[in-house]
Length: 114
Length: 109
Image 1: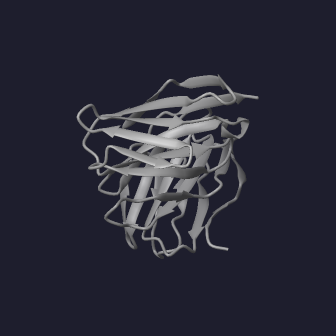
Image 2 (image 1 turned 120 degrees about the vertical axis):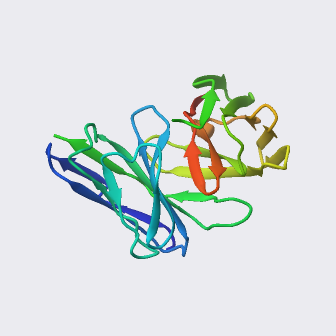
């Protein structure tokens, strides 16, 4: 099946630890995105990548890092510098076109700091 | 900062009624999209409207875009209980796609 796979679905992290969320897509999309969603809130853009080996900061990049070594993969690391990391994280991808990027989402990863 | 702001934040209607949600944004855009999210799930794309379009239809959905007012509206006609979800607008500025704060719609059977 084509789609976006995020793992793990649920993750618990101790304070001071880094954690990496996985995102893989087999849609052959050029662009990939990471968003954070807090309960009852909208989505906030963390990082996005339009092409392999390139990525840009979104609106809330502090305390996060990403890499884009392969077209299919866009992992997100939540570092210990992120003061309030408990949230729902959504990965997405899009095929770049002149008409605009229709974004396809994974099912999300719930991160809880314990 | 959020590019888009939806209103109302929450909307409760009876099944069969129409639901209208509005989105305002701050800067010029390439296109605007509407998405739906069921609780705890990923978002699903509903409709895209380009900056040079004024209105678009898809099934029971009607979207309008007014670039002079930097606003868009989503109309869901003849609502169903299954339409209960959160709805978000998203703006695309040179492939940077940002989302609004969302409208939580409840359709009462």
